[in-house]
Amino acid sequence: MSVNIIAHIDMDAFFAAVEQADNPELKGKPVVIGANPKNGKGRGVVSTCSYEARKFGIHSAMPISKAYQRCPHAVFLPVRMSRYHEISDCIFRIFYDFTPDIEPISIDEAFLDITGTRRLHGPAFGVCLKIKERIAKETGLTASVGIAPIKMAAKIASDFCKPDGILEIKKDKLIDFLWPLPVEKLWGVGPKTKSYLNNLGIRTIKDLAKRSREELCEQFGESGDHLYCLSHGIDPRSVETESEIKSISHEHTFERDVNDKEVLHKTLLCLSEKASRRLRLEGLKGKTITIKVRYEGFQTYTRAATFGFSTNFVDNIYGKAKELFEGFYSAANKVRLIGVKVSNFKNLYVQESLFEETAKEKKERIHKAVDFIKDKYGERSIHRAA
Ligand code: TTP
Ligand code: MG
Image 1: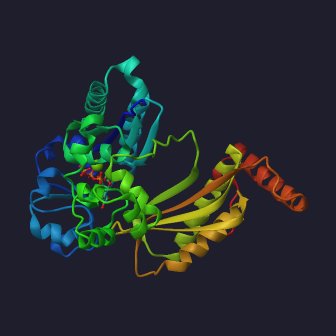
Image 2: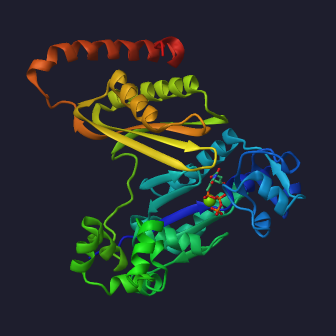
Image 3: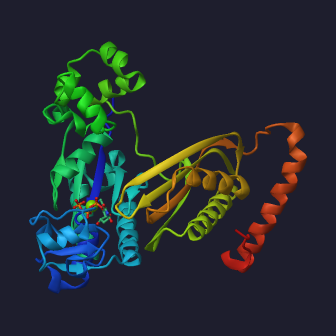
Protein backbone atom coordinates (compact mmCIF):
# COMPACT_ATOMS: atom_id res chain seq x y z
CA MET A 1 0.00 0.00 0.00
CA SER A 2 1.38 3.41 -0.90
CA VAL A 3 2.11 5.77 1.97
CA ASN A 4 0.74 9.30 1.96
CA ILE A 5 3.06 12.15 2.83
CA ILE A 6 1.32 15.08 4.44
CA ALA A 7 2.90 18.31 5.62
CA HIS A 8 1.33 20.63 8.17
CA ILE A 9 2.77 24.13 7.92
CA ASP A 10 2.11 26.78 10.57
CA MET A 11 3.71 30.21 10.78
CA ASP A 12 5.51 31.12 14.02
CA ALA A 13 3.92 33.87 16.16
CA PHE A 14 2.30 35.03 12.94
CA PHE A 15 0.86 38.52 13.62
CA ALA A 16 3.81 39.44 15.87
CA ALA A 17 6.36 38.12 13.39
CA VAL A 18 4.82 40.22 10.59
CA GLU A 19 5.17 43.32 12.76
CA GLN A 20 8.78 42.43 13.52
CA ALA A 21 9.54 41.88 9.82
CA ASP A 22 7.93 45.22 8.90
CA ASN A 23 9.82 47.04 11.64
CA PRO A 24 13.21 45.38 12.29
CA GLU A 25 13.68 47.45 15.46
CA LEU A 26 11.15 45.12 17.06
CA LYS A 27 13.23 42.00 16.39
CA GLY A 28 14.37 40.24 19.57
CA LYS A 29 11.88 42.23 21.66
CA PRO A 30 8.73 41.13 23.46
CA VAL A 31 5.93 42.21 21.12
CA VAL A 32 2.26 41.78 22.02
CA ILE A 33 -0.49 42.12 19.40
CA GLY A 34 -4.04 42.79 20.53
CA ALA A 35 -6.17 45.29 22.40
CA ASN A 36 -4.76 48.56 23.76
CA PRO A 37 -3.33 47.84 27.24
CA LYS A 38 -4.01 51.42 28.45
CA ASN A 39 -1.35 51.19 31.17
CA GLY A 40 -2.84 48.01 32.56
CA LYS A 41 -6.46 49.21 32.54
CA GLY A 42 -7.25 48.13 28.99
CA ARG A 43 -10.00 45.65 28.17
CA GLY A 44 -9.84 43.00 25.46
CA VAL A 45 -7.31 40.30 24.83
CA VAL A 46 -3.96 39.30 23.37
CA SER A 47 -4.20 38.01 19.77
CA THR A 48 -0.69 36.67 19.83
CA CYS A 49 2.79 37.64 20.96
CA SER A 50 6.40 37.11 19.95
CA TYR A 51 8.36 34.23 21.45
CA GLU A 52 10.32 36.80 23.48
CA ALA A 53 7.02 37.82 25.13
CA ARG A 54 6.02 34.19 25.71
CA LYS A 55 8.94 33.91 28.15
CA PHE A 56 6.95 36.22 30.45
CA GLY A 57 3.99 33.81 30.37
CA ILE A 58 1.98 35.87 27.87
CA HIS A 59 -0.17 33.94 25.38
CA SER A 60 -3.09 34.27 22.93
CA ALA A 61 -6.52 35.02 24.42
CA MET A 62 -5.04 36.27 27.71
CA PRO A 63 -6.59 39.53 28.98
CA ILE A 64 -4.42 42.40 27.76
CA SER A 65 -4.30 43.83 31.30
CA LYS A 66 -2.70 40.62 32.54
CA ALA A 67 -0.17 40.69 29.70
CA TYR A 68 0.69 44.25 30.71
CA GLN A 69 1.21 43.16 34.33
CA ARG A 70 3.53 40.37 33.22
CA CYS A 71 5.63 42.55 30.94
CA PRO A 72 4.90 46.30 31.02
CA HIS A 73 7.95 47.10 28.88
CA ALA A 74 6.72 44.91 25.98
CA VAL A 75 5.82 46.66 22.71
CA PHE A 76 2.00 46.56 22.46
CA LEU A 77 0.58 46.88 18.94
CA PRO A 78 -2.92 46.78 17.43
CA VAL A 79 -4.06 44.08 15.00
CA ARG A 80 -3.48 45.01 11.32
CA MET A 81 -5.64 42.37 9.71
CA SER A 82 -5.33 43.48 6.09
CA ARG A 83 -1.52 43.36 6.29
CA TYR A 84 -1.64 39.81 7.71
CA HIS A 85 -3.95 38.79 4.85
CA GLU A 86 -1.45 40.14 2.30
CA ILE A 87 1.36 38.08 3.81
CA SER A 88 -0.91 35.06 4.10
CA ASP A 89 -1.74 35.28 0.37
CA CYS A 90 1.97 35.37 -0.41
CA ILE A 91 2.61 32.26 1.71
CA PHE A 92 -0.25 30.34 0.10
CA ARG A 93 1.05 31.26 -3.38
CA ILE A 94 4.37 29.66 -2.41
CA PHE A 95 2.53 26.49 -1.30
CA TYR A 96 0.72 26.33 -4.66
CA ASP A 97 4.09 26.39 -6.45
CA PHE A 98 4.79 23.01 -4.87
CA THR A 99 1.41 21.27 -4.95
CA PRO A 100 -2.23 21.96 -5.77
CA ASP A 101 -3.32 19.65 -2.94
CA ILE A 102 -3.69 22.21 -0.19
CA GLU A 103 -6.20 22.42 2.63
CA PRO A 104 -6.11 25.89 4.19
CA ILE A 105 -6.88 25.73 7.91
CA SER A 106 -6.47 29.34 8.95
CA ILE A 107 -4.69 32.54 7.96
CA ASP A 108 -1.28 31.06 8.84
CA GLU A 109 -1.76 27.32 8.60
CA ALA A 110 -2.40 24.60 5.99
CA PHE A 111 -2.08 20.93 5.20
CA LEU A 112 -0.23 20.05 1.98
CA ASP A 113 -0.39 16.63 0.41
CA ILE A 114 3.14 16.24 -0.96
CA THR A 115 2.90 12.52 -1.77
CA GLY A 116 3.30 13.24 -5.47
CA THR A 117 5.92 15.99 -5.42
CA ARG A 118 8.96 13.68 -5.24
CA ARG A 119 9.51 13.47 -9.00
CA LEU A 120 9.64 17.25 -9.38
CA HIS A 121 11.06 18.42 -6.07
CA GLY A 122 12.74 15.40 -4.42
CA PRO A 123 12.00 13.81 -0.99
CA ALA A 124 9.52 15.37 1.46
CA PHE A 125 12.03 16.80 3.92
CA GLY A 126 13.85 18.68 1.16
CA VAL A 127 10.56 19.97 -0.29
CA CYS A 128 9.58 21.41 3.09
CA LEU A 129 13.00 22.93 3.53
CA LYS A 130 12.59 24.65 0.14
CA ILE A 131 9.15 25.93 1.16
CA LYS A 132 10.58 27.32 4.40
CA GLU A 133 13.44 28.97 2.51
CA ARG A 134 11.06 30.63 0.06
CA ILE A 135 8.84 31.88 2.89
CA ALA A 136 11.92 33.29 4.64
CA LYS A 137 13.18 34.95 1.46
CA GLU A 138 9.87 36.43 0.35
CA THR A 139 8.39 37.44 3.72
CA GLY A 140 11.25 37.35 6.22
CA LEU A 141 9.18 35.00 8.41
CA THR A 142 9.69 31.53 9.85
CA ALA A 143 7.30 28.59 9.70
CA SER A 144 7.25 25.23 11.42
CA VAL A 145 6.56 22.07 9.45
CA GLY A 146 5.42 18.63 10.53
CA ILE A 147 5.60 15.79 7.98
CA ALA A 148 3.80 12.49 8.55
CA PRO A 149 1.72 9.81 6.80
CA ILE A 150 -1.46 11.12 8.50
CA LYS A 151 -2.81 14.61 9.07
CA MET A 152 -3.13 14.35 12.82
CA ALA A 153 0.52 13.34 13.29
CA ALA A 154 1.72 16.06 10.90
CA LYS A 155 -0.09 18.65 13.00
CA ILE A 156 1.32 17.30 16.28
CA ALA A 157 4.80 17.22 14.71
CA SER A 158 4.69 20.87 13.61
CA ASP A 159 3.69 21.90 17.14
CA PHE A 160 6.58 19.85 18.49
CA CYS A 161 9.25 21.60 16.45
CA LYS A 162 8.11 25.23 16.93
CA PRO A 163 9.57 27.72 16.23
CA ASP A 164 11.38 27.44 12.88
CA GLY A 165 11.59 23.64 12.81
CA ILE A 166 10.91 20.68 10.55
CA LEU A 167 10.04 17.29 12.01
CA GLU A 168 9.39 14.28 9.82
CA ILE A 169 7.67 11.22 11.25
CA LYS A 170 8.17 8.29 8.89
CA LYS A 171 5.56 5.52 8.65
CA ASP A 172 7.67 3.00 10.61
CA LYS A 173 8.17 5.48 13.47
CA LEU A 174 4.56 6.67 13.66
CA ILE A 175 3.52 4.45 16.56
CA ASP A 176 6.72 5.21 18.54
CA PHE A 177 5.91 8.90 18.08
CA LEU A 178 2.24 8.72 19.01
CA TRP A 179 2.06 6.24 21.85
CA PRO A 180 3.90 8.15 24.62
CA LEU A 181 1.79 11.27 24.03
CA PRO A 182 -1.05 12.21 26.39
CA VAL A 183 -4.40 11.04 25.07
CA GLU A 184 -5.74 14.60 24.65
CA LYS A 185 -3.37 15.07 21.70
CA LEU A 186 -5.75 12.90 19.66
CA TRP A 187 -8.22 14.77 17.48
CA GLY A 188 -11.63 14.75 19.05
CA VAL A 189 -10.42 14.34 22.63
CA GLY A 190 -11.44 17.53 24.40
CA PRO A 191 -11.32 18.20 28.15
CA LYS A 192 -14.48 16.15 28.86
CA THR A 193 -13.39 13.05 26.96
CA LYS A 194 -9.91 13.40 28.43
CA SER A 195 -11.15 13.29 32.02
CA TYR A 196 -13.50 10.42 31.16
CA LEU A 197 -10.60 8.49 29.63
CA ASN A 198 -8.30 9.38 32.55
CA ASN A 199 -10.92 7.97 34.94
CA LEU A 200 -10.77 4.72 33.00
CA GLY A 201 -7.00 4.71 33.59
CA ILE A 202 -6.25 5.82 30.02
CA ARG A 203 -3.62 8.57 30.08
CA THR A 204 -1.45 8.03 27.02
CA ILE A 205 -2.31 7.17 23.44
CA LYS A 206 -0.69 3.80 24.10
CA ASP A 207 -3.09 3.15 27.01
CA LEU A 208 -5.95 3.78 24.60
CA ALA A 209 -4.46 1.61 21.86
CA LYS A 210 -4.27 -1.32 24.29
CA ARG A 211 -8.06 -1.32 24.78
CA SER A 212 -10.10 -3.41 22.39
CA ARG A 213 -12.09 -1.85 19.59
CA GLU A 214 -15.27 -3.41 21.02
CA GLU A 215 -14.72 -1.89 24.46
CA LEU A 216 -14.15 1.58 23.01
CA CYS A 217 -17.21 1.31 20.77
CA GLU A 218 -19.29 0.26 23.78
CA GLN A 219 -18.10 3.31 25.73
CA PHE A 220 -18.14 5.91 22.97
CA GLY A 221 -20.31 4.58 20.16
CA GLU A 222 -19.09 5.50 16.69
CA SER A 223 -16.37 7.80 17.95
CA GLY A 224 -14.92 4.84 19.89
CA ASP A 225 -14.00 3.28 16.57
CA HIS A 226 -12.47 6.55 15.42
CA LEU A 227 -10.39 6.84 18.61
CA TYR A 228 -9.24 3.26 18.24
CA CYS A 229 -8.05 3.92 14.68
CA LEU A 230 -6.28 7.17 15.55
CA SER A 231 -4.45 5.54 18.46
CA HIS A 232 -3.12 2.98 15.96
CA GLY A 233 -1.98 5.68 13.55
CA ILE A 234 -4.89 5.15 11.15
CA ASP A 235 -6.55 8.36 9.96
CA PRO A 236 -8.56 8.10 6.78
CA ARG A 237 -8.99 11.87 6.39
CA SER A 238 -7.23 13.16 3.34
CA VAL A 239 -6.09 16.66 2.57
CA GLU A 240 -9.26 18.32 1.30
CA THR A 241 -8.33 20.63 -1.49
CA GLU A 242 -10.49 23.54 -2.41
CA SER A 243 -11.19 22.18 -5.86
CA GLU A 244 -13.30 19.31 -4.51
CA ILE A 245 -15.82 21.67 -3.08
CA LYS A 246 -17.48 20.29 0.03
CA SER A 247 -18.78 23.57 1.28
CA ILE A 248 -18.93 27.23 0.44
CA SER A 249 -18.28 29.67 3.21
CA HIS A 250 -17.66 33.33 3.70
CA GLU A 251 -16.33 34.98 6.85
CA HIS A 252 -15.82 38.52 7.99
CA THR A 253 -13.40 39.72 10.65
CA PHE A 254 -14.40 43.08 12.09
CA GLU A 255 -11.76 45.76 12.40
CA ARG A 256 -13.30 46.49 15.83
CA ASP A 257 -15.24 43.90 17.84
CA VAL A 258 -18.99 44.44 17.49
CA ASN A 259 -22.13 43.77 19.54
CA ASP A 260 -24.54 45.91 17.56
CA LYS A 261 -27.19 43.45 16.35
CA GLU A 262 -28.07 45.48 13.31
CA VAL A 263 -24.48 45.44 12.10
CA LEU A 264 -24.24 41.73 12.82
CA HIS A 265 -27.46 40.97 10.91
CA LYS A 266 -26.33 43.07 7.95
CA THR A 267 -23.03 41.24 7.89
CA LEU A 268 -24.83 37.89 7.96
CA LEU A 269 -26.95 39.05 5.04
CA CYS A 270 -23.94 40.18 3.07
CA LEU A 271 -22.13 36.87 3.73
CA SER A 272 -25.28 34.91 2.78
CA GLU A 273 -25.50 36.85 -0.49
CA LYS A 274 -21.90 36.07 -1.30
CA ALA A 275 -22.41 32.37 -0.49
CA SER A 276 -25.61 32.25 -2.56
CA ARG A 277 -23.86 33.82 -5.52
CA ARG A 278 -20.89 31.48 -5.38
CA LEU A 279 -23.13 28.44 -5.07
CA ARG A 280 -24.97 29.48 -8.21
CA LEU A 281 -21.71 30.13 -10.03
CA GLU A 282 -20.52 26.61 -9.13
CA GLY A 283 -23.89 25.06 -9.94
CA LEU A 284 -24.37 23.83 -6.39
CA LYS A 285 -27.16 23.69 -3.82
CA GLY A 286 -26.72 22.77 -0.18
CA LYS A 287 -28.95 21.52 2.60
CA THR A 288 -26.93 22.49 5.65
CA ILE A 289 -26.35 26.04 6.85
CA THR A 290 -23.67 26.65 9.48
CA ILE A 291 -22.79 29.87 11.19
CA LYS A 292 -19.52 30.56 12.98
CA VAL A 293 -19.18 33.22 15.62
CA ARG A 294 -15.89 34.13 17.24
CA TYR A 295 -15.95 36.37 20.29
CA GLU A 296 -13.32 38.92 21.29
CA GLY A 297 -11.75 36.33 23.62
CA PHE A 298 -11.34 34.01 20.59
CA GLN A 299 -13.90 31.49 21.84
CA THR A 300 -15.46 30.17 18.66
CA TYR A 301 -18.93 28.70 18.30
CA THR A 302 -20.64 27.04 15.38
CA ARG A 303 -24.32 26.27 14.99
CA ALA A 304 -25.79 24.31 12.10
CA ALA A 305 -29.21 23.39 10.76
CA THR A 306 -30.29 21.25 7.84
CA PHE A 307 -33.21 21.92 5.51
CA GLY A 308 -35.37 19.16 4.13
CA PHE A 309 -34.46 20.49 0.67
CA SER A 310 -31.40 21.85 -1.12
CA THR A 311 -31.06 25.52 -1.81
CA ASN A 312 -28.80 28.25 -3.04
CA PHE A 313 -31.27 31.07 -2.47
CA VAL A 314 -30.14 33.93 -0.31
CA ASP A 315 -33.54 34.16 1.43
CA ASN A 316 -33.16 30.60 2.71
CA ILE A 317 -29.51 30.96 3.64
CA TYR A 318 -29.88 34.28 5.43
CA GLY A 319 -33.17 33.26 7.08
CA LYS A 320 -31.58 30.18 8.61
CA ALA A 321 -28.29 31.91 9.46
CA LYS A 322 -30.15 34.65 11.32
CA GLU A 323 -32.36 32.15 13.14
CA LEU A 324 -29.28 30.19 14.27
CA PHE A 325 -27.55 33.38 15.35
CA GLU A 326 -30.57 34.60 17.32
CA GLY A 327 -30.81 31.19 18.96
CA PHE A 328 -27.65 31.59 20.96
CA TYR A 329 -26.19 35.07 20.73
CA SER A 330 -26.32 37.41 23.69
CA ALA A 331 -25.33 41.04 23.13
CA ALA A 332 -23.13 40.92 26.24
CA ASN A 333 -20.47 39.39 24.00
CA LYS A 334 -18.58 41.32 21.38
CA VAL A 335 -18.07 39.56 18.08
CA ARG A 336 -14.74 39.49 16.32
CA LEU A 337 -15.55 37.27 13.38
CA ILE A 338 -18.73 35.94 11.87
CA GLY A 339 -19.15 33.39 9.08
CA VAL A 340 -21.79 31.58 7.03
CA LYS A 341 -21.25 28.18 5.44
CA VAL A 342 -23.43 26.12 3.12
CA SER A 343 -22.64 22.43 2.75
CA ASN A 344 -24.24 19.03 2.17
CA PHE A 345 -24.46 19.49 -1.59
CA LYS A 346 -26.53 17.88 -4.22
CA ASN A 347 -26.18 18.17 -7.93
CA LEU A 348 -28.21 21.04 -9.28
CA TYR A 349 -29.28 19.16 -12.32
CA VAL A 350 -31.24 16.51 -10.45
CA GLN A 351 -34.83 17.65 -10.20
CA GLU A 352 -36.18 17.57 -6.68
CA SER A 353 -39.85 17.56 -7.37
CA LEU A 354 -41.52 18.27 -10.66
CA PHE A 355 -44.35 20.17 -9.02
CA GLU A 356 -42.09 22.65 -7.29
CA GLU A 357 -40.26 23.48 -10.46
CA THR A 358 -42.31 26.34 -11.83
CA ALA A 359 -42.16 28.58 -8.79
CA LYS A 360 -38.51 27.69 -8.29
CA GLU A 361 -37.60 28.36 -11.87
CA LYS A 362 -39.03 31.81 -11.51
CA LYS A 363 -37.00 32.48 -8.38
CA GLU A 364 -33.92 31.09 -10.08
CA ARG A 365 -34.41 33.51 -12.98
CA ILE A 366 -34.58 36.45 -10.58
CA HIS A 367 -31.38 35.36 -8.84
CA LYS A 368 -29.62 34.99 -12.18
CA ALA A 369 -30.72 38.46 -13.19
CA VAL A 370 -29.30 39.87 -9.96
CA ASP A 371 -26.00 38.09 -10.60
CA PHE A 372 -25.90 39.48 -14.09
CA ILE A 373 -26.36 43.04 -12.87
CA LYS A 374 -23.72 42.55 -10.16
CA ASP A 375 -21.28 41.13 -12.70
CA LYS A 376 -21.84 44.07 -14.95
CA TYR A 377 -22.05 46.91 -12.47
CA GLY A 378 -20.23 45.57 -9.41
CA GLU A 379 -21.05 43.95 -6.09
CA ARG A 380 -22.59 47.12 -4.61
CA SER A 381 -25.04 47.80 -7.43
CA ILE A 382 -27.90 45.81 -5.92
CA HIS A 383 -28.55 45.41 -2.24
CA ARG A 384 -31.38 43.96 -0.31
CA ALA A 385 -33.04 45.87 2.44
CA ALA A 386 -32.01 44.11 5.68
P1 TTP B 1 -1.59 30.53 15.82
O1 TTP B 1 -0.94 29.81 14.67
O2 TTP B 1 -2.39 29.71 16.78
O3 TTP B 1 -0.50 31.30 16.70
P2 TTP B 1 0.82 32.04 16.24
O4 TTP B 1 1.10 31.87 14.80
O5 TTP B 1 0.75 33.46 16.71
O6 TTP B 1 1.92 31.34 17.12
P3 TTP B 1 2.51 29.85 16.97
O7 TTP B 1 3.96 30.04 16.69
O8 TTP B 1 2.25 29.21 18.29
O9 TTP B 1 1.77 29.20 15.83
O10 TTP B 1 -2.53 31.66 15.27
C1 TTP B 1 -2.23 32.41 14.10
C2 TTP B 1 -2.65 33.84 14.28
O11 TTP B 1 -4.04 33.91 14.60
C3 TTP B 1 -1.94 34.54 15.43
O12 TTP B 1 -0.69 35.09 15.03
C4 TTP B 1 -2.94 35.59 15.84
C5 TTP B 1 -4.28 34.97 15.54
N1 TTP B 1 -4.87 34.48 16.80
C6 TTP B 1 -5.62 35.37 17.54
O13 TTP B 1 -5.84 36.51 17.13
N2 TTP B 1 -6.12 34.94 18.75
C7 TTP B 1 -5.91 33.67 19.25
O14 TTP B 1 -6.39 33.32 20.35
C8 TTP B 1 -5.13 32.76 18.45
C9 TTP B 1 -4.86 31.37 18.95
C10 TTP B 1 -4.64 33.21 17.23
MG1 MG C 1 0.99 29.98 13.88
